[in-house]
Image (tube, rainbow, N blue to C red):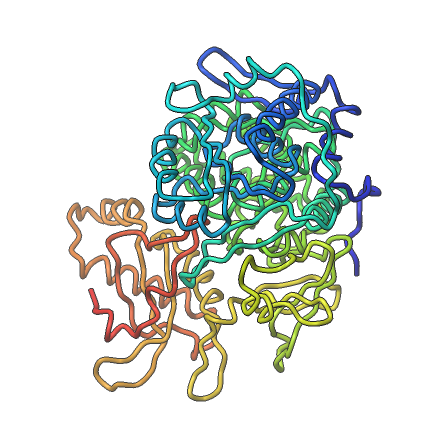
Length: 577
């Protein structure tokens, strides 16, 4: 079964050509917006195009030629978008940087990619000016803000009244080099062409019905390919508006959502967990009458589902979603990591129009998406147009490595032919390193990472992510890592779990038991009880036999994935708490 598309695409084009076309088609429509101290800053497509061309001319005057690299780094804001597009309009290659990396990591990327120009948020400009002294290739630093430390975008626009002509860029030309932050501890530069990115944008356009009048709420980091492709270039391709969140603080988010009233929003599972967790905390604190009314609505929603299907929760919980700023939401797309089933179920029970996508930086990134008309909670959906998916070396259950082929598959890893050969086959298939299976209707399901799979002495395969998703259904478990460990007494291998408890919920549990200062043994007993209860859903050989508690969150990559490689040694070597 192929993805039931909403409409035909507009055709593949380079990023500069897309910008030019959108500016001509949607000239007076809102393109970018962000709430500030003095109200909203707004830019139409015509205004955005004019600014981009003028900035691009300055970049060319500074020596940025065809194929030269320039970096953009900063928080989500209109200036980030302008800088990114200006790099392309000047004929350059964009190298987005994560603002949360260390100076040492920035320096490594800038040196490896031979970046000539950095366009940075004002608060980081001094760091890049210091780096510039040590790098031969880095020639100029431009600030998004007028802070006096470096040439600013504002000063450029004040001087440059004319813009650069459209560059001679080909679809096969390099557009972006993305440096990944892997859970294995290694970082590689993913080379994406204009064809890679814009074919993916075109496919997304066919799958989701949006256009002028729609508002994309941008909350995920723009240097990540998911937000850059699906939350930035995709809305510009179809004439929608992008509204940038001021910050990830709960108060700012809620105020921005209420003012913005978005229709489309990209999220990661962690954000959904926080939304769902916050709502449940409010319900627990509510008066008995309000609490009873909420559960009455949930019961009514389930009772009416056979008759109204997905419309039931949308109708009954409309006022709750409106209060949170989600009243106009038509699509909420989760990506970037596997969505726990309980989170997806919880969001859809409240009427959120939740879809799930799957992809990687190497695939620009989207490979699959759940159709709005047929969302399957446990599946990551069907292949989007132009994409083929297959399972390599499936076992008796149909589980094997997921491979993908299509125009969105990367050109390769920058300066790393060996790593490229390891993942790209001669006939064009990209080996994702993810494990999964495809059902009889063509829907894809994820089971874990190939490098994370645990093989028992009996030859059984255990997918840690599967066990973790079950354990995360406990309100008392915030984060968990499942791995193979050594029993300290017998020396035998066993499945073990490291747990970072949800201490807020743990404290509430013991408060209800009138125990204000629970000991570590008390907490361990509660967590063990939860693991035992939930593990009954798993085959006996998959159940954790030893629990270790953590007092702090797990170290994570910038995409909020736990760094598994730090915990690969058996517990006996790590030490127990």
